Structures are given as structure tokens and as C-alpha cells.
Amino acid sequence: MKRILLATLLAAGLAAPLWAADDPIFLFEKSEKVRVQIVSVDRDRRVLTVRQPDGETAEFAVSPAVRNFDQLKEGDIAAVVLDRALAFDVVKGGNAPAQIKTEEGVGRNAEGEKPGATWETTKTITADVLAVNKDKGLVKLRGPKGRVLEMQVRDAARLNDIAIGDQVQVRYKQALAMWVEQAAQ
Image (cartoon, helix red, strand yellow):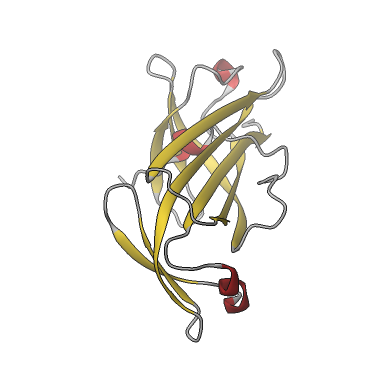
């Protein structure tokens, strides 16, 4: 059975702007909404099995933070919205150690409402700039574990502000909301 990371994603809040930074150097945003049908509910383990739009089934654990789990039943149709965004900020002449920092947040529906929740995870990765190719719009970065990555920049002109020896902070935010749209009859 194909597994998806809905449990992790369900912990994401869709409120607030993705980043409060004035002008992140690169930005990627994507939002997807899918409808899934609940195939089975394991109340003891708090595990849902859902049928995805492509017909595949997926199983995931539902956090105890999700209220009204006991209202879920086989046949319910749920909406799942997944938002993802990526931003880079330049730290001129930065000398912080390369690192990864993770923040998580949870939102949930009120008691008695239809089941639903939001989850949010933001990872901030500090990386060293090893090379900049303005002509090709590429930047080469070394991350916390020494891994070197070359990335394409959406707007190559923004590379004018980056030099070897600078650091970038890469922020990746993943947010997911899930709620019951139609209860089984």
C-alpha cells in the first residue's frame, strides 16, 4: 500500500503569510487540493485509510491533536489542501555554522464541529555559498552535512547580490489542512 505523509502534513496551519521576510531571494509556491474518500477508520490506533484520486489507498496516523476523530466514518469525503513554499535569504559574509532548524504548529476545529485540522512544518537550513554562475542562473551551496547542491534560480538577476563566502538561509514550509466535506450517508 502506497503511504503518504498526510499525518506529518496535517500538522500544518494555513494561516499567516508563508514568510515575513521583506524580499526572499528566490521563491517557490505551490498549492494543491484533492478530495479523498475514507475507506476505513481504526479508532484504537487513530489510523485512517483513504482512497486518493488516482485510486491508490494510503494509510496514515492522525494526531491526538485532531478533535472529533470519533465522528469520522467509512465513506466520508474529505478535502486535503497542501501548500508548499521555498524561500532563500542571503546573509552577507555569514559565518554561522551550517544547520537545520525545524518548527511545527497545529490548528484544529472546535469541539463538536466536523473533524478537521491543520499542520505546519517549517525547516530553516543555513548553507554556505560555494559558487555563483550568473550567466546560467545557478548557485552552488554546501549544507549542514557537507552535501553540495547546485540550484537553478528563478530570477537569475537576483544572483547579483550573492557572492562566494556568503550564506543563505533556505526556508521550506509545508502546510496541510484536512476537513470532512461530505459525511457518509
